[in-house]
Amino acid sequence: MADPPDKQGRAPGEMTPEELARFERRVSELGNKLGKVKAGRNADAEADRDAEMRGRGMAYGLRMAMDLVAAVFVGGLIGWGLDWVLGTRPWLLLLFFLLGFAAGILNVMRTYQQMQREFAARTGGNIGHRVPDDD
Amino acid sequence: MPDPIHQFDLHRIVPINLFGWDVSFTNSAAYMVLVVVLSTGFFMIATRTRSLVPSRLQSVAEIAHDFVADMLRQNVGKEGMKYFPFVFALFIFIFMSNMLGMIPGAFTVTSHLVVTAALAAMVFLTVLVVGFARNGLRFFKLFVPSGVPWYILPLVILIEMISFLARPISHSMRLFANMLAGHITLKVFSGFVVMLLGAGIFAVLSPLSLLMVVAITALEVLVAFLQAYVFTMLTCIYLNDALHPGH
Image 1 (spheres, rainbow over the protein chains, first blue to last red):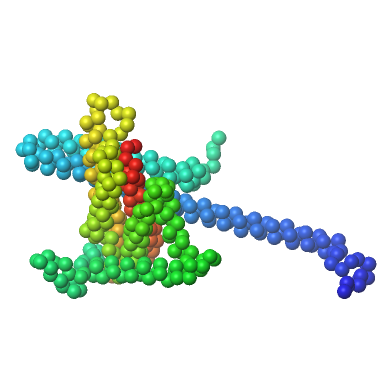
Image 2 (image 1 turned 90 degrees about the vertical axis):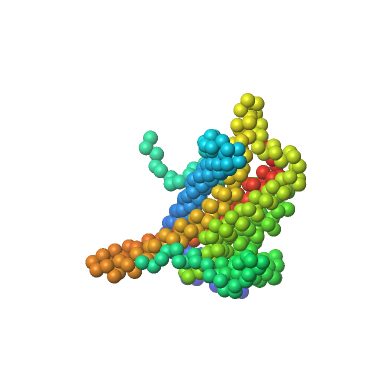
């Protein structure tokens, strides 16, 4: 059953001009608020991602340090062992120490390539804080 | 000052002597059992219902599964999924040990080099066995990068071999060193809080130290996850080498 028309002869549910203006103001206020909340949330998400990328960066850094040291150590160990077996002290130790260093650098370079790939895939190429451009 | 190393002490719970070897059940072993029981229990409960619309527990289990599965697929490819149980077990074990270690007073299994070295050796041997089983002698191609002139090839092969042999060492040292260093740092700063309180005027610095402890704890939780992730990630990369030697 339909409601009867009111005194001004408008259909039920229809708004007076004042009501309409108030309604639109409320909508735009709500839109502003929503925009603020969304912006805050985006900033939060960005900060989270930033912290995560920092953590990953640190993990990678420590990993590279360890890669380098481990290879030098293993190289030295092999050289020392060979010297011990062949009685050529200290020449093979020196040689393999250097080779170990080369291997360490190789490891670090491989790790770095992998890091680049992962970070590029994760962030789409922009790493760290967004810095306003001076130009 | 409280001894920061004390937390890593091993003590025998059930002394066992096998053929002259001391294989006692220690607090470390107890925590390993706890880790296995907890993670097995969790996954059994989480996957009990197996509903299409997952419950909270089930979605945690699914996230963990997808996390490791994606890592394997990206780094090894589809055939890597054959090794999923191994890699997943590794990840969950390390992750649970690290996280359990974050509970004050708990023992951190992964802060002992023996444990991480055993895990890394397991991965290394798996790579060797799988590599030779699947590729035979072609596995040695791993040491021969393509496009290298013959006159420096011997040098490069030596370097590649050292780099290969260094893997289990850096693999195990990284996890161990991270957990050890983190827990020592935490203990030292917590020690400062108490020491400063009893140091007259310097007591005003005590809250600063406490703040550091809170910050480092947060960092350590991140490290606990990241190191489990890194260990698993490297396992995937090494497995990839075993399946596809030759760069």
